[in-house]
Length: 306
Image 1 (cartoon, rainbow, N blue to C red):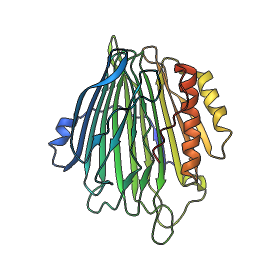
Image 2: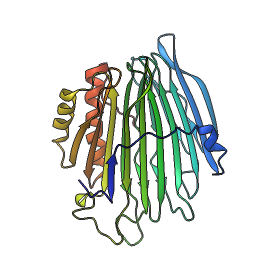
Image 3: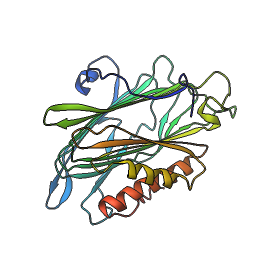
Image 4: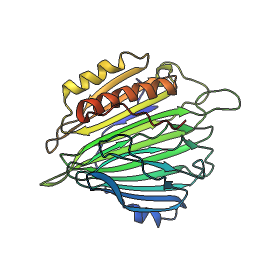
């Protein structure tokens, strides 16, 4: 799909996990902070803890069907991430709870002179908990540099689905890939009886070359990237094959990889390259729709935000 120096997806050794509280005191200006805890009350999932400050908050909850799954929408009233901004997000889905978390609009990264913009996120899923994280696309504009780090802790019986689309923003001269660098890191641990075990450490680095080069060797001539991460005890080769078959209805260039099994649960990562945000949204929507129908008897998502 690419050369190692330009777009990377690798596993490496696990370092120490920094707490978000320590990051908040580390000197970078915290532009927004959000905490959300979800539990089960009266047969449906509800928020039992909410806290926000700065340029992050959530809208009132919605229930899109009769499953009891609660849907929250994250909002950034500031509209964009700028240079040296730090955003902190902590989400806990307690035992048996079910959360769908999305965003009100695309996450926009504008010019970041002096220092990169950064988002740090901690996700914790209890026994039998479920989290679907489906934000709108991440748009990196000219001269933007961005880092996104997620520390994820799951129980062997919990279910996690994360979908994301990355696209280059509009440039005044019409050229593609005018952003400087995107780094996205997902560290996933499984809380087993013997302690926390590493399931996956996924690093994604996109560093466009100088000039307007989008041919072979850099994303194979494509401009947009879609990612789907699934962690669930039902993940296996048959599911990977089903998702691979689902992608074949699209012109995007896609591939699926499985993780090892840890504590009775496994994960998979699907990557897709395309020239269209809409196509990647439809592709990832088809894949998440398959999981929702097969595992939970739910219809595909239709958030109707536009």
